[in-house]
Structures are given as structure tokens and as C-alpha cells.
Image (cartoon, rainbow, N blue to C red; front, top):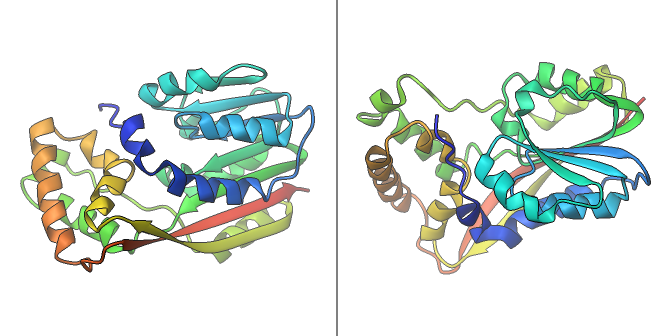
Length: 257
């Protein structure tokens, strides 16, 4: 399966993507001299901000995209390093003081088992901070999945269907309590992004959600897929300029008891 992550495509909406990260970071208490990991670190500039703001001694940025990590290396040093790996195999060799993940865990299945492993990787008193998109009911996502289930794309995907593992916010609050966390804070926030036009929604989704399909399609088939997706999405969205792209996200922070 090809690495479909493109740092330049992802960076087209750098400032819009930065705000949820900073809202999550504001929930984290500084940990001078501690150890942290950023799961799904992407191109690394926000991991640098995480490392410096929390005052930890060591931060590992983990990502499964070589293209993203190549870009991230520019931010390494002074206690921050980046590593190729997958969230699915998260198992730190030393307990951590902070497990942080900004817009990445939505790619991992079975959140009950996943959060058990995240909890197991924390020291007593360690912090868990997670932000995940919860925008799967927006037309930008619904139509992407609908087109992928049609031919010729369904055959090209060989049975693959994008699954959405993100649960309701109260589910996470209850799970964190069951796992022994305290000071549990789970929020839902709507981010109203003002884009130049509705066409920019396609560019946004190409940088994230559509990568699951792009990585499994030949280039020429993926180009036809995007054409069909664009056509159908434009018939659904209002032709406003600027266009407000509403994006729902779940943010959570808790401390291991």
C-alpha cells in the first residue's frame, strides 16, 4: 500500500489545522523533565511546539508516513526525535508522562483496546491528551465513502471500506473512568473554517480523509474517483464565498490515577 500522505497538500490549511492542536495543548499541564510521545506527529512543527511548551526532557514523534517524517526531521533536536512506526503497535519501553495525539487516532480501530494500551504506557499521574475529528456525518465525508462503494472504485479497493471508529464523547468519558483516569475532561467543539469557496473543501479532504482511498488505488483510477467526488459534493454544498466548512472534533484530557 502506497504512502499517500503529502506534506504540501496537508499544509494548505496549516492555520486551520493548528487551532485544534493549540486548544488540546492548552489542556495539558507542563511536565518539566518528563517524557512524552506524539502519536501521529505528521510534519513535526506542532510536535516541536508541544515539546517546548510542556517543558519535557524527551519527546518522541511517531508517524507511519516516511514523507511526513522526512519533513519532520527539520524540527528534531534538543530532546525531540522522530520515529517511523504505527499507533497500532504502540508499546513504550519506558512509562511516559504524556501521551499526546492530535488528529490521528481516528485511523486506528477498536478504541477500547487502543485506549487500554495508551493507559498502560503512562506513569501514575501521567496525562493523556487526544483530539480526533468527528466530522464523519458531514457531506464531505459521507459522499467520499458513497463514491468509494461504487464501480469502478469498489473493485479497485478490493473490498476495502473506510471504517470510522470514533465513538460518542460520553463513551470516552466512561471508558477513561473505567481505565482509572481522573480529572476527565471530554469536549465537543465545532470549528467554523472560512474557506475561499466550496471547491477548497475538496483540497482539504484530499490532504487527510481521502488518503485512505488514494493509497489503495492506481493513480489514474484515483483521479477519476476525485472527479466524481468533486462533482457530487459541489451539487450538495452551498455556493457561498467565502464558504464556511464546519468541522466537529472531540478533545479530551485526563490524568492517570
